[in-house]
Amino acid sequence: MQRIAIPAGLRRMRRVATGLLIAVSILYVVAYTLERAHPWVAYVRAFAEAAMVGALADWFAVTALFRHPLGIPIPHTAVIPRNKDRIGEGLGRFVEENFLAPQIVADKIQAADLAGRLARWLTDPQNSALAANGLMRGLATTANSLSDDDLHNLIRRYLFAPVERTELSPLLGKILAEVMAQQGHRRPVDAMLRKAAELVHEYEPQLRHAVRTRTSWLWRRFSVDQRIADRLITVLEEMLRTAADDPNHAIRTRIDNALDNLCQQLSMSPQFLAEGERLKKQLLEHSAFADYLRRIGRDFVDQIASRAAEQAPEIDTPLAQWLRGVAERVHGDEALRLEINLMLRGAVLRIIELQRHEVARLISDTVKRWDATTLSGRMEAAIGADLQYIRVNGTLIGGLAGLLIYVVTTTLLAP
Image (tube, rainbow, N blue to C red; front, top):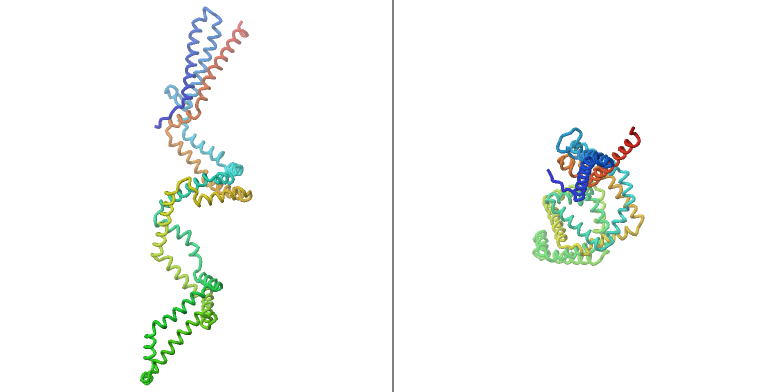
């Protein structure tokens, strides 16, 4: 059982109410003793007698709400402890129906201008720096709680999901067509042709050997094969270097035509489409690719954690500047602010609609778990001294009522 701290004001009013009961009780005894010698004291006795009755009745009523008076289990006392579960259910329903009703929440949100308030708050550099620091730390805490597999699944689901839904072959065809339209393929083709010319020179011995093995012994006898090889190597080198320097060369035209045809094949050929999907699936399902996603995910988390640990709340970071810029734009654009408020209103209403029954159940279950004495003490402490004022008022009003009855009885109804 949890001990409830009694507020000082409640303790003070308890002493006042109890002291008043004792005072009128003493007054009654004194008045009763002096009444025969001094008949006018009967008025005082009538007041004190009725005041005692009123004080005792209100003490009983107030005490019976929270516990058995004097520990005696009188029927219909300790009302709150006996009905603890029903009170919890009623409190949950009350909050659900009167505080979390969708229309009530919608009216509050519409009148609150949440977007405007948040924008005004964020325009202060200190607030935007504090918000940025909180976002970084929250993101770091959330990210650090994820395992490597969780990071892999998140990256795969949210970053690579569009890739998985996109056909690879047409995408490559569009990219290649755009590169060719911007003449971006010229330099790679130039480099390729120059490299081919270098390879002809580098592999000259192999080329000469190939020519020699493919000519007759008679030509080799008169070194005709060597002259053929010399001419072939010279022509190949000159042709490739010329093509590399001349964008209008026939070889360049053939290469451009081949690339145009490849673009069309990539975009329309069923064979290319199927092969592209096979390669994409093979890549995405490869264990090395999965390991790569886990590694970049963990590196990203480590960088966030490092930045969050090093960042002081008062530092004006790029994130804080971005938040402030967004806030200034929202603050100055009434139409945008209205649109954001509508979005927030819809989001909050959806959350409330989904969770308000859970909130009511949470309140009910929490009250049910409380000890009966704990609940009684908490409610009495929450109400505070007001119930003790009832005792004081009962004492005084009871005494005045008793005095009035005595006066009426002795003056108007006496024979």
